[in-house]
Amino acid sequence: MTFRKPKNRKEICYPFIYESALTCDYEVHTDELCSLVGMVLAQMPEGFDDVVADLEMLHPKIYHLNGSVRGKTAIFEEDLEWLHARYDYYNEASKGRISRFVLPRGPVAVMALHQCRTGAKKTVRLLHRLDESGVTFEPELPRFANLLANFFFVLTVYIKMKLDVEEVDFVSLSY
Image 1 (cartoon, rainbow, N blue to C red):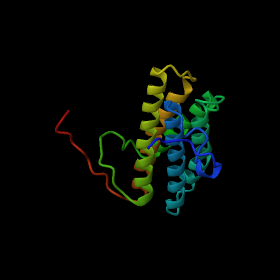
Image 2 (cartoon, rainbow, N blue to C red):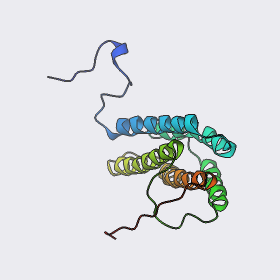
Image 3 (cartoon, rainbow, N blue to C red):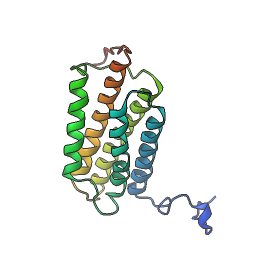
Image 4 (cartoon, rainbow, N blue to C red):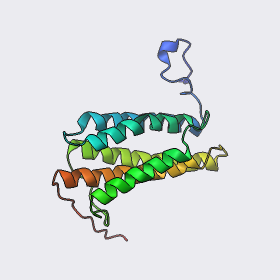
């Protein structure tokens, strides 16, 4: 079978879906990441107004990250500064509990955040591969995506601390 682009627009889920370039893979992936952030928002327990407000601020930035490779850059130094400040807020509120490797466990919202964390890592990898393939974009994009992965992790620690859910350490036998 020859896989062909349908003529009927209703049978095309995304205008660039039939491209062979990694740009489309990146866009599909960051679309998934944006959906995962929406899932976290739908699962957040009561009493986390700070997290909800920050995720609501962050949510459209994921789509800005999405479009910043093919289109105009929409992630700026101010976005990095904001995300750094929010990371520091949750890290300080977590009383330094981020000092070891832990198993990804916890309530549904925490697990959804772990999915976001791994999704942000995949975003970094795709940006790296895009760069290797010759696609140019602003350096703020991989910086933001790396920080995003760490931000999602610090949120998991903060939420588990506030819910009094114990972290389960992971000690590698490999490293």
